[in-house]
Length: 160
Image 1 (tube, helix red, strand yellow):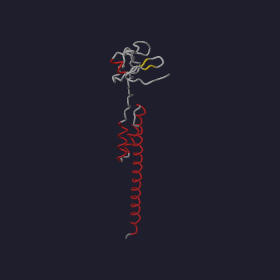
Image 2 (cartoon, one colour):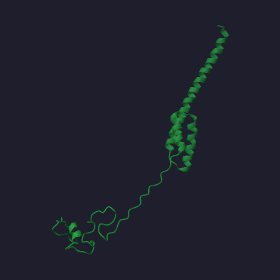
Image 3 (tube, rainbow, N blue to C red):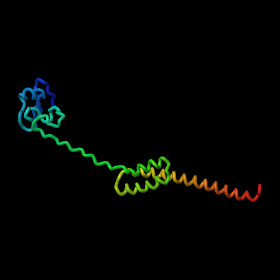
Image 4 (cartoon, one colour):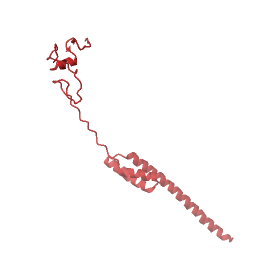
């Protein structure tokens, strides 16, 4: 297929379709250009040669208008509120409360399909770590107190 570039003062043709400059086709009605037939519109231009109108309307009458597909976004699943509470309480150092709320939140997430599983697991892990730290501290103080009682009882028999 041979193509050539039209100039404003001449009509150029390809193998089968006449092409005229766009400004001549619009102002003079397309002098010397075919006004009907395949690939032409009523104004003498060729299909697709018209300026973009921006409104979705065809540049030339008779051209089909492409339908714009509706963009429908899927509904975003909600984040489980109890999972968020679990994370906040886990970060703040509450030990037992995030463990309880975390297990309840995981059950709700599994049942309802909500988002927030990662948040809940993070809060639950922080809750378990805090709870383990509390238990270690509690055992340490119980051991210290026990040794102090044993030492006091053992030293009482010598009568200092």
